[in-house]
Length: 350
Image (cartoon, rainbow, N blue to C red; front, side, top):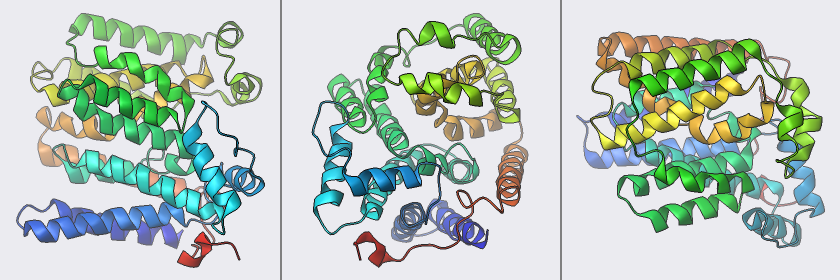
């Protein structure tokens, strides 16, 4: 547990320095580099953390993904590097951690309330820690977040390139292509509220089982219908919190004035819709991941409704308490609480 606590303290210290506009820009830039370095190091050299760690380790050691195909060739590159060189699977985790966290954090600095955004990203269990559990998909999600600047600037080909690059690590990213034409539009409050309410009723209250129907059309990941459907349960208080935030933002009249904000609001809205539907169809979480990562950017914007310091205190207290509770309730879980952190030499086979 101390590894996590020390990591968070150090990371937030550098985050605070990097966002303090009273300081010299060079100092802030150096602190930003230090923040990214710390976040990448912890994600890359964690020893066994994450549900997928052992699986990736075995796949890379045995070269199961060495064949180059149109399906996820980016992953095949790393698989070949690890298998045919003296580099260990830690090299793969390092490269994915570097790409994922650099792109996420670089994107976060484009928005206001950067400190709060990064605080939520690091402490929210479905954000930074998911880079340990959904290694390739969170890498793809970071490329998607990076591509949003091209939606703002109407650079379609740049957006397509980022999405296709993301798909080389996780094929599900290919479904993000049409969203270029969806997320930069204004939608009426009535439509947003109706869609949100219906999604919550269908997913969280009625819990309509769509598995058998949708399994006929989503054959690419057919095994999820066999196994992960048994894990279906409510997304809990966090999902309810997201819905309440959305309702408040929808009725806030000035929510669509800024193009940059309008886009991330729409992305967060889609993410919450998909989260609402997860109890009815668990596999939807694979698509929800790409959109819910925009929650840290949108949540601080409620400062337009509540006093800024009050809302910042609520977010820090809420996500901080959730983070501590997650650690405390997982003291005996080696997939969440590390026994050790690997050294730099672990990148190489011994």
